[in-house]
Length: 215
Image (spheres, helix red, strand yellow):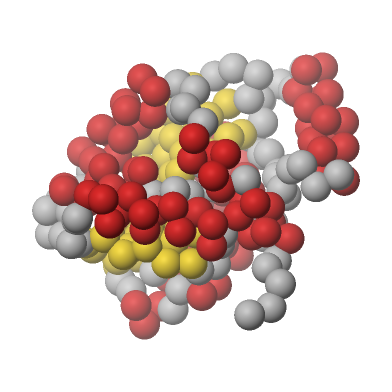
């Protein structure tokens, strides 16, 4: 097995630390989870990309027929499978995969989930087109993405132009690119979706939740 790509190696390296870190906004996480589950049905075949250590997939599993959850980092998937073994769910599959590894022959999925992922993808337009190819007509793409504030500000500039590049240079941060919520929604529409629901949790950086239906 060859060396991992840079970002996959980064996330694998921090996977145990990531898994042991508490969710900063548990109330917000649970609200997002419930909103997402409200769009899913017991018959649904679901794909989650960028699943991390699998917590969201395991919580969604009881509400769907099957969920396949993938991540680029082997370390993350190792932890996810440990959790799966302890819970004994039979309708969850965890595997290491990049988005390009998913074939449209595996589709169509009823829904694809991408929580806290899109700002980490170097080629977002291409990624959204690939996601659309994996969803059946009328199916859903549900995402939550860290976005740039609409009006910038010095704190955002300091983070995006100074802090993150410095951390990336020393191997302490992965690729990241922030766009505004409006730009994100336009890119999702261009990929062949209609926006069903969108909402923000605002702060120094905006967390933008989008439910989109494939046309």
